Image 1 (cartoon, helix red, strand yellow):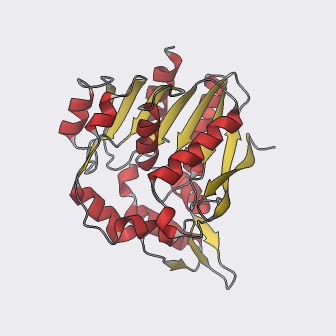
Image 2: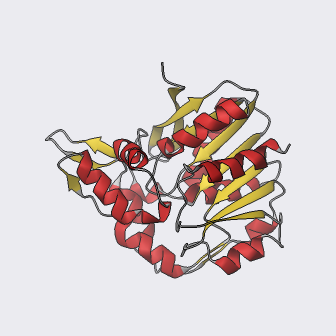
Amino acid sequence: MPDFVEKSVLGLSATGFHRMAYTEWGRGARTIVCVHGLTRNGRDFDVLARDLAASLNARVICPDVVGRGHSDALANPDLYGYPQYLADMAVLLARLDVETVDWIGTSMGGLIGMLLAAQPRSPIRRLVINDVGPFVPKAALQRIADYVGRDPRFADLAGVEAYLRSHYDGFGALEDAQWRHLAEHSARRLPEGGYALAYDPAIAKAFTGVPLTDVDLWPVWAQIRARVLVLRGVQSDLLLAETAARMTVEGPKAALVEVPDAGHAPALMDPAQIAAIRGFLADA
């Protein structure tokens, strides 16, 4: 029997309802929500979720943001963006029926967490941000824009794994079994045979039609009241060293963990990374 159950909740956009899938680990009293990066999905957190559910006696919720994983695609790709993502997460939090949650977010998931944590009466008690911050340089956004709209095809899962290894080397030095796990959950079978990536290529719409510029969310950062832990890949081009350092002295004055041999973004599968998160969340 698996350690998790698969569930879903209905979100609402201007074109109707859509299904947002999520996995739920554990049945503990405290609730932890883990939200993935732009082209990823909730199964990225399997290793971390299994650990936290057991070690912290927690219920760990890992959604697939709309357009990713097992969640529905949006009928209107113009709606892929943070207003929709925030609305969907508010629905998920209502479904969970808890007063407070801890939030772990990688890249896009970290930005969603920041935006929610900055709101008045936010339910987020602890916030773990993985390799993103209130300043995102244009150059990093351009790198992402260059690959996110692609829709490659693969003959088998080995091809998917090779693609992930070449495009997501910032995850760090993963074991072969871990790359295989990511490949299995990063692919969707095609009716005609073979595989594609498990996200709607139309999520790239947010990167087209407007000039890319630096993103400055320091006013948002100043409004966060939750305790914050930031993880940064030492080789990251998205969370710059100077941004991470500033995050430790402004706003919520985050604790900072630098992750060696990783860029954007640490995969949170390494025991040391998991231990840092576990320790931060355990220190209630």
